[in-house]
Each structure stands twice: as structure tokens, then as C-alpha cells.
Amino acid sequence: SNGVVSDNDVLVISPGTAYGIYASYYNGAVENMTYDNNTVFVQAYAACGMELLEINPVVSNNEITAEGNYTYGIVASIRDNGTISGNTIKSVGSNVGSEATGDSLLPKNSMGLSVKGSTLIENNVIESSDYGVKLIDSEGMTLNNNNITVNTAGNVESYGIYALGVSDLEILKNNIIYVGNTDGTVVNNAIRISGNEDKEEIASDIIVDGNTFDIKIPSVPVYYDPDTWESSVMSEGIVFYYCEDVEFENNNIALDYNNASGMYDTIYVVAVRGNPYNFDADDPIACANVTIVNNKITAGGHGYIYGIFAAAKNLEITKNDLIIVSDDYYANGIDVEGPSNGVVSDNDVLVISPGTAYGIY
Image 1 (cartoon, rainbow, N blue to C red):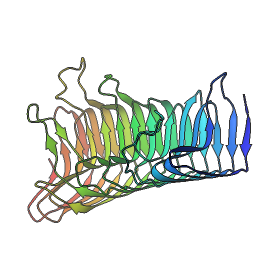
Image 2 (cartoon, rainbow, N blue to C red):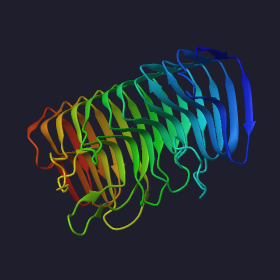
Image 3 (cartoon, one colour):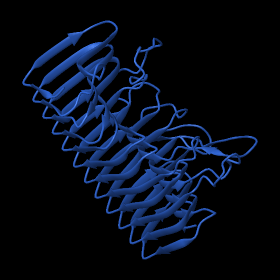
Image 4 (cartoon, rainbow, N blue to C red):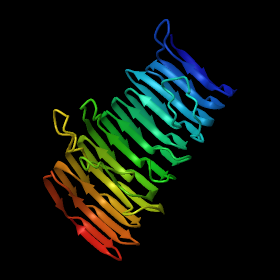
């Protein structure tokens, strides 16, 4: 089937799971559909503005509001290619509730956009209380010129942009405002791009260029496995985990801590790393071919703060401007951990701390 769904005003209210617009292939493919200029309001325990399982959809110029315990603006599983552009999405769930949603595509995490499949995502305004944009197992995705705001509600794992098992991903010229409001026991990241460690599938061909970040996250302890000393880091700005062929260039990052708790509370602003303690993997869980070039990073932390923390093969850190400040004890501008090789050159690094400070470590 194919067609157009446009200019509708949709209001849906339910105590359970509810959808404003729903499309799926049962007796045949849904393809080449256009969803344009619809106004959708959904209020429910699990409230979803649009759920689309389709081939080549175009979703444009819609206004979507989802309210409830767990909320979702647009959830899409796309074959071939899709376009999501010019939409205004507000997904502001409380992230509190023990009941299941009854839909495997609607986890108990509120999301602005959740997309699987090759998709152009551009010129959207997205507000969420948990995940801003979630990208899963996809090749050939572009996020361009979006305004993404995440103000975390509830003590939940939260991301501005989360990408797992992706390749050929471009994140370009977006404005990302991210506020993590948690107690430090769950992850807070403005961006996290990760390979799939369980499947030993590395994320590859990643470009993050020309974005602006305003990040506020708690400064909290790093946890370590008592047997392997593998670290679990809760508060970071931008994370590349188990990635290769990464370009992180021309970005402007402003980060401040909004709460501090525990001993050795820590924030990493930009982190590149793998898991050298995964002894079950056939190949090392590591990053490779990473360039961090011409970024401006201004960050304020409490106990411990690191501007750039990187462990990668063929690493380049050049022409960056860093101002890293701790108001309690420790600040580190650029920290390169092993196993790594590469170049650190032509950076402007200012580090201020009342205790210990390193420009480049």
C-alpha cells in the first residue's frame, strides 16, 4: 500500500498503551507513505505519537505531543530509506511505572525519536525526558540541523543521542541541550555511540561535526568490577565506545556539573575507549582510527574532571581549544590511556584546579 496521511488533528487518551498513528505490514508491505502536517496528542501510560514499520516513509511537518508514564514521539523501523524532517516532537514521560507496555518497540524509556534503518533526520525540534534520539543497528543515517533537548525525569539511564551497532552515521550541525538529573547510579550522556560488544560488532564510519552542546550532568563516582577492574562510568558528555573510523571535529561543548556526590566524583567530557577486560571476545574491544580535531571544550567539574580521555589505535588529537576547571581537587585536559598510538599536537589547553592539575597526561 502507499498513500498520504495529512492535515489531521488526532487526540488519543487511554489508561494503557495508545498510538496516535500506527502503520505496520500484516498482509503486505506499507511503502512510500507520506505523513505530513498532522497534529497528534496522545496521553496514556505508554503514549506513542507514531509507530511506523514501513518501506521508504516520509514523515514531515507534524506536531506530536506524548504525555504519560512512558512516552514516544516517533518510533520507526524502516526498510530501504526514510525521511523524518521538520517535525516538532514533545515526549515528556515521567519514566515511572512497573507495568510493561505490551509492545517490544516501546521499552520503559521515554524517547523523542527511535529509529532503525537508513534514515535522514533533519530540521526537527525534539524535546524528551529520557532519550532524545535512539538509533539501533542501522547503516547510512544522517542527523542534520536538529534541535534536541533532554531534561531527564526520574532516575533513569538517559541520552541526548544514543546509537548502538551503527555504521556510516553522520551527526551534523545539531544543537543539543542535555540535562541529566540522576543520583549517579545510571548513565548520563549527551551522545553515546557504541559498537555491540555482545555481538563483537564495531560501530564504524562515524562523523560528528559542527554541533553545539550545552551539557549539565552530575559528578559521581566511577565504579570498578572487583575482579577485572573494568570501569563503569556514569557521567560523560560525549562517548565513543568500541568504534573505528571516527571524526569528531568542529564541535562546541559547554559542560557544567549540576550535582556532586560520593567519593572521587568524576566527569569525562569527551571519552574514547573500549573494554580491554573483555577476555571472551575473539578480537580486542577497542577503538581505532579516531580524529578529535578543532573542537572547543569548556567544562567545569567538582572532584575529578577530564576534558578528553582517549584510548585508541591511530589516534589524532589536534587543534583543540580546552578550558577545564575543577572547583574541588583534580582537573585533566587531555588524558591518553593505553593501549594507544597517535599524535597529540597544536592544542590550546588551560587547566585550573585547587589541587592536582594536568595539561596533557
